[in-house]
Amino acid sequence: MDPLDPCHLSDDALLLDAKSTAGLASHATARLLTRIAEIEKRRLFLREGYASLKVYCVRELGLCDEAAEKRITAAHISDRFPAVLIALADNRLHLTAVLMLGRHLTAANSDELVAAATRKTRFEIAMELARRFPRPELPERLEPIVTTPPMTMAAPPATEPPAPERVREAIRDWLEGRTESPVLPAPEPAPERVLAVTQDPCGPAPERVEAPRPRMTPLAEDSFGLQVTINRRTYELLQKARSLLSHQIPRGEMALVLERALELAVEELEKRKYAATDRPGRSQSGGKPSRHIPAPVRREVRKRDGDRCAFVSESGKRCESRTRLECHHEDPFARGGPATVENTRLLCAAHNQHKAERDFGTEFMERKRAEAKRNRKGPRRNRPHDGKAHAGSEQPDRPHTGVIGTMAGTVPSYFQQRF
Image 1 (cartoon, rainbow, N blue to C red):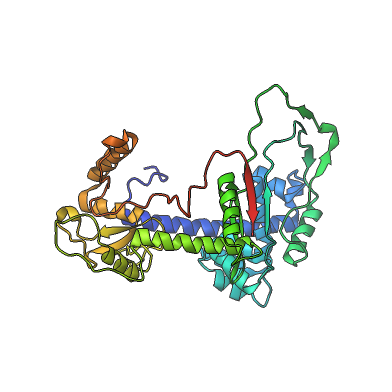
Image 2: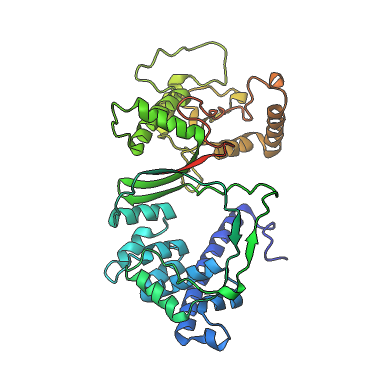
């Protein structure tokens, strides 16, 4: 039997084996960190013919450059703070958590920070650190991104790895708070190996420079840094919104304009999706049964479920998803289930499909999804009016073309926005 093939495992056995394997992997990572730290103390990488610990980790341990740097840094942190190593071995901290905590750890707070970061996601740990160690707000900036690379460029020079002493010094400076990040010293260039590369002006057009990835960083308990790339259409909408809001926001701060725009968008989307209103009308009862869920029912279901997927596992774990929520008939409409508050609950799209497969069978639902996919690709006039794949679900809302629009596009001019 192939030990890497899990097909023979039952559902429960597969889940237990995955947890066990994850625990073993965490213990193996912690064990590797202790070995890396000890190899560095004994300088054994020199005996094996390597000028630095990083190169040894890459060549002998099979790690990529980034993984080697992370594990060397984590080895130094765990060597100074044993509580971190124990939490990593017990699968209470992941490796990224160790790196995030590293620059804030002291002998006095190590146990407290490890407990606060236990079984937290990267963003949750960033929020906790921002609350405890707030940073100043970022300056507001809006600038165009250059999309045309220079015609002449030089190949990057060949390099030699930095000396081990410089590596240790850089990591020590970071741990003691003298530098902002654990960046290793720049390698020494070898100019004699530089090659000039010139682009043919008559050749194909250069590819567009990839825009920076969106990023949201907690700065303090109530402030966040946001970096996002927008297309020209969104830029024009932003400028128009700043003009329209100039009486309420005279200085046109983008953070305040964005807040007001999102308030209007959320209000409009809540009306569309949940029929949210301050003056609910009278509910109409009776009539022919329909998949349509009345507005009063949607409002009550949303209030009861708290804008969150209401699926609960057999062990009592409730789904945490708050995106792609759909109204689900607990007793399917196809089997006579009514559109009442008691028979309706919010489910994320994944759990809505999961429930549908449990109610109607996986093969039936796969066939229905294939039919719906074919209908979407066909001519619009041939599409059914009600294209729901699951008899007890509502389709997610389509992108709204009012306040919120589709930001992805093929416009060549991009802008980078920070506030």
